[in-house]
Image (tube, rainbow, N blue to C red; front, side, top):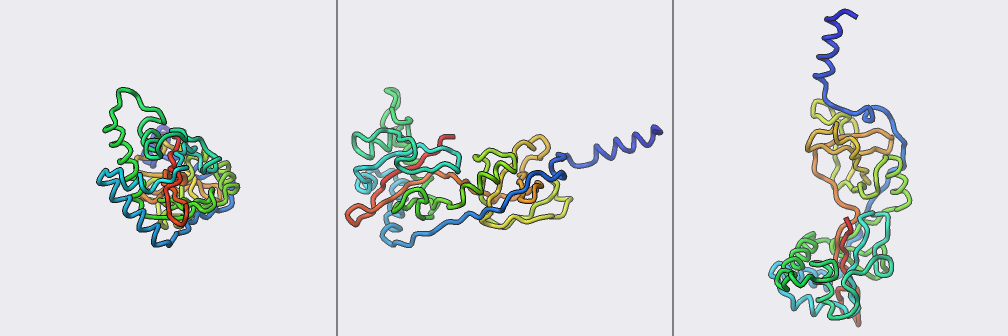
Length: 265
């Protein structure tokens, strides 16, 4: 091959955007999976959640003490969204003895056991920060893993068996599964020089492919698609499938906090 041709080819390769052969080579296909959120419209619960949101921001403990069920448990659930998360199905942090608020404080601040070097004031700071962030989502919906429980934020419902197959087909860990929150165009290369070649719709399961990190510029996300290909987006529109939450249940006709959900990352 003449030297000038070899040079021209080298320049052409260097000028091309970085990408992985996986972006053009079909992988395993999977059936699309939809994710849904069922909203709860109980006005009494909505009012309680709003008042607790304000109390958390104001760092007021009394409203939480009043709202907590005696049987309250703090749950430490897996980050894997394919695993159930509910009382009896997940690890309890902070035990079952003592006052419910104290158990919640210890679960949030200290993994269930406070260090002598951690003053109560610091424990409260951590607890209220977590409560405020969790309740700030402003959505409420049924817990798909616990009948009669309603959680804030609303927890996603989806076919776990199909989601597991999607993760396996896309070659990602279940922890990398997300849900698209808006319709997003996807490009075959991580650059705006390429026109959108596909669209992921709001509510669709999105396996986030991380083994292309070296070939994906900062600000771009690689998504494994049902046809086995990979699409790229620089939009921000993915939610966790395994969020932290505060869950409520009725006791003697009154809504009470029955559990909190933390995620083991």
